[in-house]
Length: 208
Image (cartoon, rainbow, N blue to C red; front, top):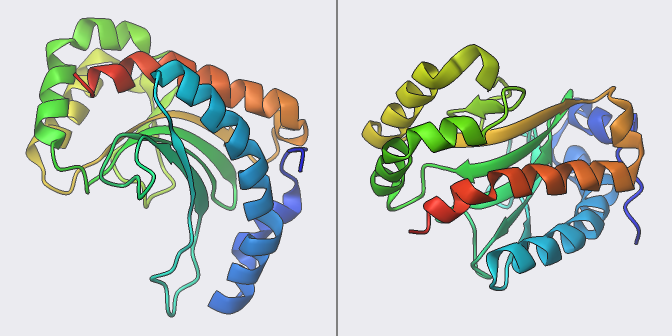
């Protein structure tokens, strides 16, 4: 399957009432697109990393009552999972697409990674474009723009990531659901690829 982009029906998935009904829509509408897009992105990241990377598509298997408010694909260096490793994500809420380099709370070595980032804060501050966004919680839709945060805000975010057990650090882009680029699969994949390439030096630092 060729990835032809996202449309409004994909975002409307998250307005469907009921766990089973919404999960059925996620399975039928969104997962095939994740698979098509993810295959391309995984190949590109494998070349960048110099080792095999693996695609994971969210299953939401633990949910028994509440329907998911978002869904995603993740790409990591582990075939068995991704949450315990730095990983790349693309996913949807009902009003935007997120493109992340993600360090979430299941990382066993977040203190070391955060410390490494803080030691190289000057280069990292220059590495992340001002139109990118940062989140401290992958469960929340909201994110702060790097332009507003500045280096001081970035330092505070990394210190929180280092010092607070459940804190997270996600950096990347948000694309609003009405952005025309989402209708063009090739252009959107190119945007995601550019985002991952821009953030890849940060991923490498996390593996030092």
